[in-house]
Amino acid sequence: MGYRQSQEYHILFIKHSISGGVTILIVYVDDIIITGDDFVERDKLRKRLSAEFEIKELGKLKYFLSIKVAHSEKRIFMSQQKYILDLLKETRMVDCRPCETPIDLKHRLDNDKEGATTDKGQYQRLVGKLIYLAHTRPDIAYVVSVVSQFMHNLKDSHLQAVYRLL
Image (cartoon, rainbow, N blue to C red; front, side, top):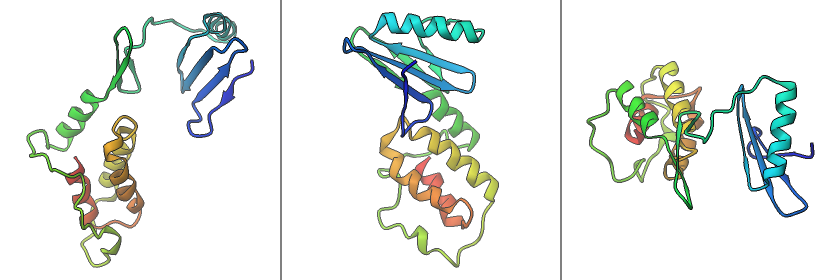
């Protein structure tokens, strides 16, 4: 139908109309979002999808992949507050004191060859959740990329860096 897949986000498909409008399709497993300012193309896409698949329209987007979406007249707000609170509860860090920076400014995580090893499964699960969280929190993206480098060769200092980030 003329949609182009995004190189950065493979779940995102975009179509620019001759009239200057844009239609966006996001597909994640069995969830889809159709949006854009070209109402004719949006209707065409809906009809085509419903001819091929059983689809259910749920109205205005409120939640998608643990992201809460709130609408105002001029803006859309996205939040993962519930996701963050659930993660803090899971790690028993709801009452922790916040740090000024998400990582020690003089961190030497890459040089920790002597430290004690830690639970690989727990570390990978937490870092995976943080990777997902970084989509709406660009302020932690750098630190998440640092800690994600040690998924297979990690020490206790790497887990402590994840806890500091939390």
